[in-house]
Image (cartoon, rainbow, N blue to C red; front, side, top):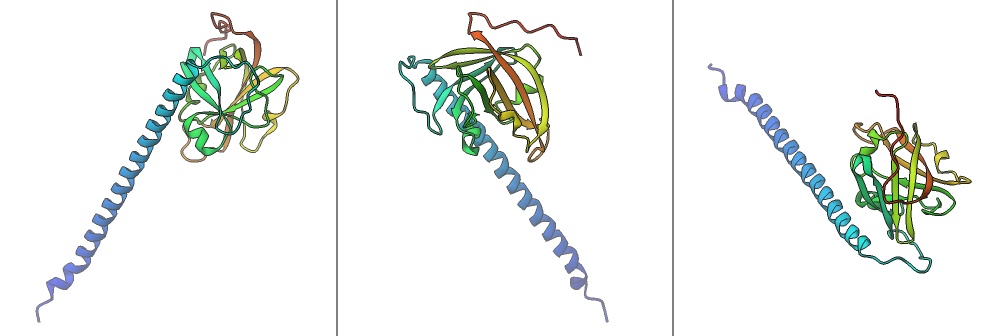
Amino acid sequence: MKPDRRAEGQPQLTRTSILRGAYYFFLTIGILALGYAGYVVVEAHTYQAYEQSKFENESRWESPRLLVEGSVIGEIQVPRLGLKAIVVQGDSLTILRHAVGHIPETALPGKQGNVALAGHRDTFFRPLRHIRLGDAIILKTPDGDFQYQVESSSVIAATDVGVLSASNGHTLTLITCFPFNYIGPAPNRFVVHAREVGPLTSEPLPARKTIPD
């Protein structure tokens, strides 16, 4: 009796169908992921452009403002790094997707204490990987413009909330995830510490001389 060649070819056909199905499944997932990533980037860019336009045309406030989550506080700039982003009250996932977030319960720009800002390492705060001692950081707000100078940077555990502690002076703390190129939720945080150096002048402070790498 001759062997049934159709039966012999059935397992091979099944494997081919499974592989083809898996190929199209992962291809679809990849396309959807890229599409979502593109949407997030465009959405953030649109939000930033709109809020920056509003902020630049906004008159100075003559009375104290009541800040609620989502309120625009101002704009952060690090001139040497080309970093420029709108700062919003709050640190929710939605806010950090659109802007740099001011961590609640920390000081506001111009007030005594520790101003703490958070941003994603793969968007607004990615340039911080090249921060240097002495770099100027500028916070522009409707209540005034403030200039800070970087004093140090460090890497801490994600659970270390000590960097949010109040200070006796006028300080600024920038926080983002670390390592910068890590895939998935990063285990650590990269922290930049700066101190206010007076009202904003027409030219930002020059960076301190440092030992070349």
